[in-house]
Structure formats: C-alpha cells, structure tokens
Length: 81
Image 1 (cartoon, rainbow, N blue to C red):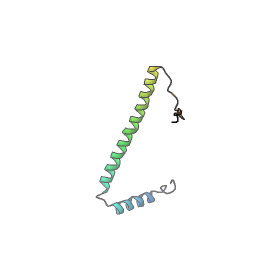
Image 2 (cartoon, helix red, strand yellow; image 1 turned 90 degrees about the vertical axis):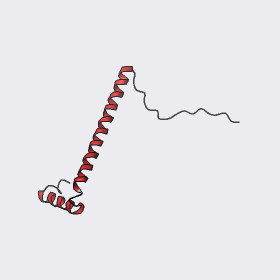
Image 3 (cartoon, rainbow, N blue to C red; image 1 turned 60 degrees about the vertical axis):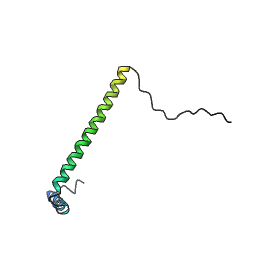
Image 4 (tube, one colour; image 1 turned 120 degrees about the horizontal axis):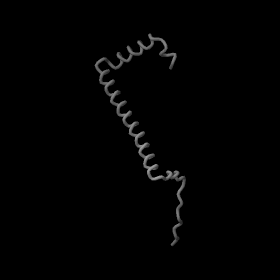
C-alpha cells in the first residue's frame, strides 16, 4: 500500500474516481454516516475498557483471585432403568 499512495498524483486520481463513481451529492451523507459509525465504535471500545476495569476493581475489593475458565464439565452418570 505504501507504493500506491506514495505519489500525490495517484491520490488525486483516486479522489476524482470516487467523486465520479458516487457523485458529489452523495459524498457528504457518506462521510456523515462514516463519522457516526466511527463515534459508535469508539464509544463501544471505551465501554469495553471500562467494563474490564470495573471487574478488576471488584476482584480486588473481594480480595480473591478470578477463577480460571473451565475446560470441561463433569457429568454424573444417571441410573439405568
């Protein structure tokens, strides 16, 4: 990717092609929806980070180690009729 966009003329050609393909009236709406999607993604990532921090605080408050994930479960045999 570095060599494709290394020259300014190729960037200008790509921008012109995008304008010709999608049309000038549609571009502001597309940019608006892209920005909105990026804001939603950013807020979700921040929410996931804060959820992880809250879980760590709860574990420290309880002063216990988090249990390791269970890799298998044991099933007790059922009596045969």
